[in-house]
Length: 531
Figure (cartoon, one colour):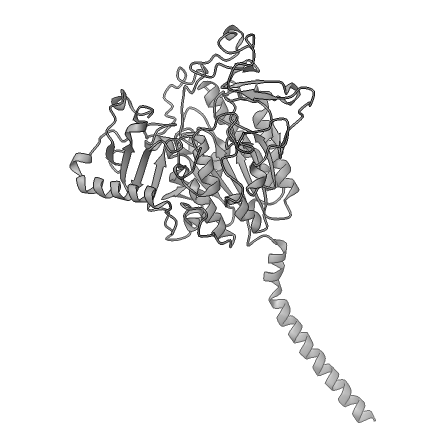
């Protein structure tokens, strides 16, 4: 019996050692598992897109501005990739925003020019968007700030009812919006499907004609304005500023211009905090520095450039507040931040705010010509920065990237596939956005001014073709030598020696011009560029 007892215990000891060794082997693999468990969204990083409004290539200090400082945006650049050939797809706001969300050039769509106050929804339900793609991938999706892509059905917005279709019908879980753009009426917030704080006994009316003969406007009551208008922008007055379009009612819902930036930060932080435990996509759509430029009082006088410069400083503060929230919630190392602009700069865009008089030596478009409304480089080449702490190595990149590529690139980043008929011009430049070794961006970029006007730019390498169709030449905002409707149909520039597009070299390079003309015509006619 004693012998059997010893044998049994020896067997048990051997088995214990075996299981202990097996346990050690399993534990040796646990650090990876535990690390992943500590970062449940590691394979799906949070994505925050911060889009400025009318911000030029030379408007921030890390891109060369010396008349003001933008320390928070500079920090993004220092911790990430600063692109010197980062583009938006159009030189006006509505088409760029359309292209960013849909991944399709706006000239392929309908009603994609600058949207009027009562515009119906431009992006229809069923259209694939960066939001719907990420939503299907398990992301919480939200947009805060300027929308300017229309709301409601074919007859336009029902301002006193449900404002749909809108962002929630194209992939966003939540929205807090400036419904149009702030130089256009109405000055109210839209939260999800409703105008916020709207009193049903004081209904909101928005129209294109003066509602009554005694309705105050920027023309009839010009002496009461706290900011005078220079052209247009002279209809209904709100907060001492006249706007494009007319509206009445909704007084309890109206906001104060000076408070916009604070509200965008407040609502963005709320969204981040509410969704910190799951992957989220936030589109922070700033209104700075679009007209009317009325920054909060604490920023007024912050620069020597007037309210335009002050609005840039306010924008920088907004970026800093978002970064602080990501740091406070320990999300920065699992969040891709993209900073960009919807188009290039403009000084006088309808209001007398001192932007021209106080410009000094500041070059809003940096070394480039043109700006908002033009297909010169200054119209669409803007600041473009990506940051992902711990993943992206700080660098300056010359690769061509564009806001239109965010849809395909974010789909690839998060393992989502695109339908064949979705995001027709969005290219996967994820590797370039993340700064991976040897990564390439686009080999070409199409630029447009507004909607489907027929004015285009095509950059391929260092060659830049401009095309002006006759139907739109009279509306083109270009350099002085091209005014009075004397715009040739095609111009060619060598950006390697002429970044300012001052010298048309089309006669000296007819073969290059023909190649680019054919390539642009093919891009337009074939209806897509994504393989």
